[in-house]
Image (cartoon, rainbow, N blue to C red; front, top):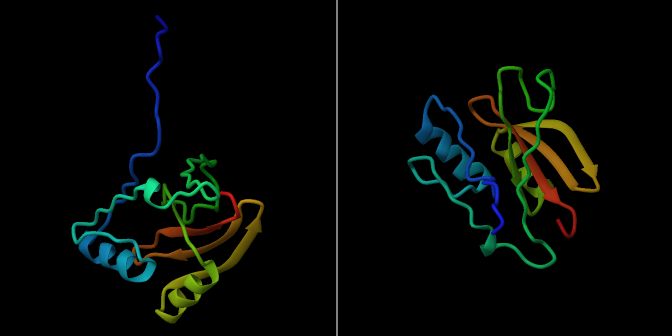
Length: 132
């Protein structure tokens, strides 16, 4: 009999502190289309959206404590949302008065842009490259 080590099998959730969870849930729902409940919860089911060409993945990455990538030094985490049309979403956010950061990135992984939620959290928006 082979003993298997207990291990992590995926990311089960992302949790944020909020000064006003209902208000922040409404902001994510109204501006980014995240289907959050009024209590501030949502569960994504990858199987509902995954295809052979676009399997759907979630990445966990660690950054040095002094990185600028995640946002202000007191921001300990950053959300990364997969999006279907980065340019259109960034335009919509700007039109709604959401703070959209000026930098963009194109890489072999796809296109990236950033915005900031009402509580100052930097959010990464990612339009994956084909096959990601």
